[in-house]
Image 1 (cartoon, one colour):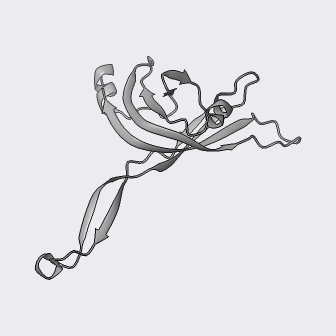
Image 2: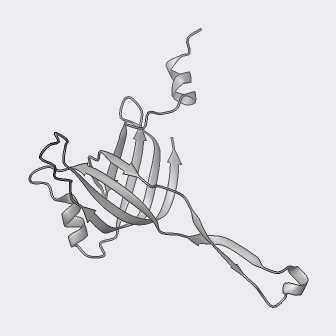
Length: 148
């Protein structure tokens, strides 16, 4: 028996190729986004009552900056990556939306702070017929997830 579109929408995984990236309120096209991880830094320390409560205490509530990479095809007249990294310490908010077949966001990863740290230019190879891809490495923090 075939499932209804509503059942499929609720229970089937979303395809990873249908995504949209918004940086500082402006939607940009990217070929790839990688490295989004929700992670907290741990701190383990000894304290004055270690004989009573145990040897060490571990705390997990420290958000951590993590590396994220954005890859985009190089287009004449568009300097999005260069303009962002040129504006030194330009912290910007980001959103990565995973969309359904109609382009409606189904899962949105919101990043409160994104700072560019490295711009990698395309590989130039006269023997290849590949598209020129730029890569921007970011350090991001303040990730939250919203599901629709």
